[in-house]
Amino acid sequence: MCLRPVVVAFALALAACAGPAPRPVAPPAPTGDGIAATEIVESFVTALTPVDNIDSIATWVTPEGGTWLIATAKDSGRLIVFDGDSGATLRSIGTIGSAPGQFDRPNGIAVFGDHVFVVERDNHRVQVLQLPDFVPAGTFGERALVKPYGLWLRETAPGELEVDVTDSYQNPDDSVPPLAELSARVKRFRVRMGDGGVEAASAILTYGDTTEAGAVRWIESIVGDPQHDRVLIPEEYIDAEPGEIRVYDHGGRYRGQDMGSGLFGGQPEGLALYDSCADGSGFWIATDQQLDSNRFHVFDRRTLAHVGTFRGRTVQYTDGVALHPLPTARFPAGVFYAVHHDQGVVAFDWRDIAAALGLPLDCAP
Image 1 (cartoon, rainbow, N blue to C red):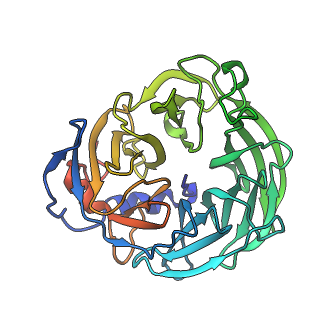
Image 2: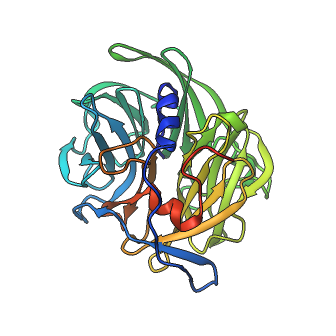
Image 3: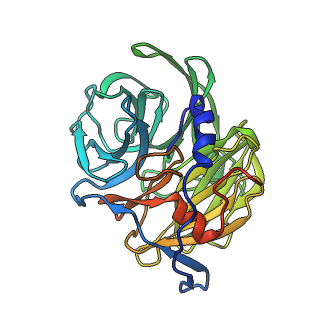
């Protein structure tokens, strides 16, 4: 649900090598299904606001070098901005509506450069705003999107983006359409950005596998890894059973492979990629959303093999997540953020995650 522009790749590589030695953490403890999940204490928990129904999060580095953590609030129709180092609430933006700067059921969010992209499920669009003042800078997708949720974007040329938006359209009774009708689960747009925001946008591709093995019946999140020609899409559940994460290629074809099969006790929800290393190494973190046994599964970026699982002391029922590997004043090796029970956000120091799971803090394979 979060993206960092490719222009900061060099800074990210430096961030991956920053920070003092890892700190000790509690040993792993099995959950009810026997999967060991090391407990990591959160660095902070933001103020909790049940009225908002917080869904997804993304980060932005301010001109002064600070970090903003921007969250979508589905029920209140606004964005909430937290300080990325302290968790303090800085401001909120927007009201419910369809005018520029208003939102109706905002869900997925991503930042590119000085623009934030927000998916609005009930306005059937992606709205773009310019930071730091959240000035409306255009919309797209109104004619193509039915029930959009998440997005992933990448720069393909200077000022030109490809934006993949998930579309969880259902039957009139909210049941899943037949497999043959799931071929448009993701819509890709080509978006040209200028100084004022969106200059042009056009739909260029729809995709979704229609086989029993590769279809995505319930879809929200999507995150791509161009270096490995992968687009990962959580299949949240199948026939009321926990799902897994489908692996597609950038052309929209299911690769006959899934990540995390058999690991999830709840819904695969938020998904983030630690991709700071130019050599292609790194890690995927996927939420296993549960009320009482909420946890995070970590996978090797290259092989997609499971390398460990952790849980927080406080965080439960996580929806969106964001991984910010740039160094900050409080988190010199980066930070992982996770939504807590639809009410707020928690932060995990990346050094603590690395120590808990034996992960390298540099880019060594």
